[in-house]
Image (cartoon, rainbow, N blue to C red):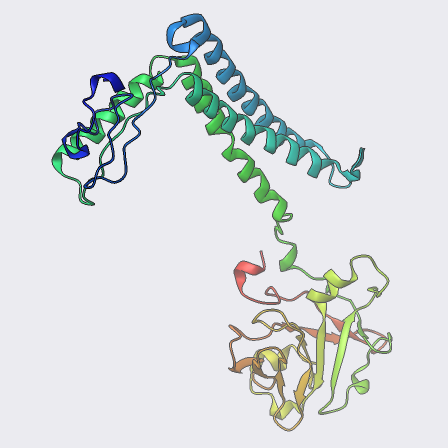
Length: 355
């Protein structure tokens, strides 16, 4: 009903509302000081009256969804094939990581094309009829629920989702492929550790080298009640992987009176009271450096986990989850302390962090 069909001065309360009529207006009065301007006359789009135009829009939307799928595939290919250390020059940005540039470009295109396709679909093919509706109570009445269901079915029918199979299939393809980019990015968290965290440089015949002097250790170099830090022979600070290897192989070497050692395995794996334990705390991997000479307890400075070196380095205080791993040691033909194998358990914190 247009403006000319409505009696002037008709109170707003008497006018039909929520019926979607275009051009309906009301006149302000004392009871209704705010006039309802109504809705403008609906204008049909070219796609509403020309099926060829609708087909062109359909192909454009499908093209955008297809480009999104190709961009997602490009993302996966770039992630798998481009080396991490390869760089390219992009004007005016300068030198960039080739992988990062390719991943950002392809992911951006994939997401943009899905959004652009959805917007173009809504603006050219879905119904654009404006509907006015009165405000209603917060709770939904059965009539409202029925209306919502009916509106949803009507919108689904008008969108052409079921009828326009080309759009539907390409949209489903694009939406199915885009999440693969997130799965590929999980690989960027770093290489899987595999079993390398279960092993260190210690092996049978490896000499224990004093970390301060760089010289191999003899049993007589370790005094009773002293704490010496050791590393495997052949490992040097200038090595490229020094930090990674020392984080697993660092040792505490302590000399105890054999009669003070309570744990039988600890005594069997020692040499004349000299015992070797991992320096890496089993809580979060901090290096242990505090030694109580009278009690033979070692203390982690990070969270105060305390271990008893006379009783298998078991935890007696703090959040550490298990005892420090012990390295079985002996002496070689020249009288130097040597390892008799690697640690029999992974060093460092909880199992899931050790691979």
